[in-house]
Image (cartoon, rainbow, N blue to C red; front, side, top):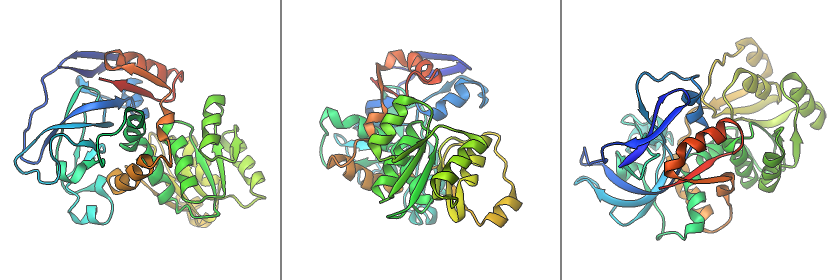
Length: 338
């Protein structure tokens, strides 16, 4: 088969690779119905995150199970499944506490920008839909594999409650779906920080009540102004830079909560500032597996449409254009059809 390989910054190729095979009794092979480019894929694509050798790309996936190992008991061929970027057994103490992305036996699921994918720990990682979904639901189910689950974790980790005032830093797919998640959790006021008209429009459709275009100290001042000097109850940091983290902490009221779900790059924290501000911090790789049953139910019942973040759809063999479009901010998120 052909799959997506990053050879060096800016050099994405769709080239011949070995077909995935069952390597362990707990594996499954999934024929993908859709995959996509993630914002985190842009870090190595831009050369910010080093790769030392040609690397298979992609970690968001959904599709039909083709084959399972002898030790798989709850997943069977023919099912439509969604999984997350970390495989987990879903039975270890960390998994039982709801942190499957820190499973004691976790494995990174990579190479998903391909027609077929090997998923380790299939019983603990994959969640099946009630039946084969109609095609129009596939984008939203795919979003549940990562960006919707990560946005949901952002809202959950920041303790978003009914009636809360929430600010979201970042208008990529995760930030937009953090807006949607905060709305689903009952936030009364949701401030989306965005400078891009198309993204602002989508944020409003997902529940944003206010848009702030300013950044840095000006962005903090604007949120303070909107909240009558109090700051937001919860701030969801969905970027991963020093500026975005400082903006998130500065916009939070004393005793409020900051979640951070953007992979940090060059971020340092001022412990004394945190100490005197009484700001809570919680984040990390989203435990998407914890939320998948809830997210699938929301999508299946048509209560939410996270798939709207895909504003570019391409055949998988044109994956390089998907990277370029997202890198140049011509697209929020590129969906790829094998």
